[in-house]
Length: 253
Image 1: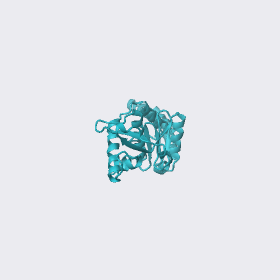
Image 2: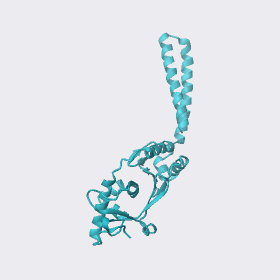
Image 3: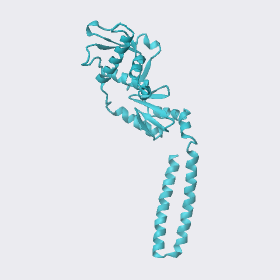
Image 4: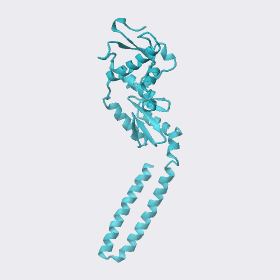
């Protein structure tokens, strides 16, 4: 389709050149060459019309249906593989550290880390994703950890459990997204990405609390509610549960 568009662009430039020539001929009164110029414009018009027809034929009849069918997602996966960018697919989204990529059929767009992009050429999107990988993430682990801990405390209090009880991360995400529609704005894939960044930062405590974060996954990895993300090294990371313990309690069993 891009090649046909380029041919149309070249023909359009030729039309403009010939129109300028025609204007000059008419201005100078070179009547003998006017008919030749008009014939040239007619031929260019036919050529341009053929190119436009080709472009219409190449355009999916229903772009939204095309994006929803899974065919476009397959193209994007192939482009990521060709660029040697590691990713995993989960619930129709692609997780390619540090980005979460979603296909938005109704909007005929792709969303990368919450930013919509209507440029659907897979190679163009792969370049954008690769650029995201090269950037330093604008991430505040302490702020995110505080939100996780506060949600954790709400769950533990509600369940009347121990203050260091292991809690599933999917339950913490549900607390973080209690407001209507918030689960669509901040999905589980987004949450998993932020957990990975928190894990990679090594941050386990903040100024607001002396309790330390403990990751729990020894048995949870084989249970429901596992969150998966691909790390910057291409290796999958799995997260299931956490607890918060006082430093003197040592490592949670």
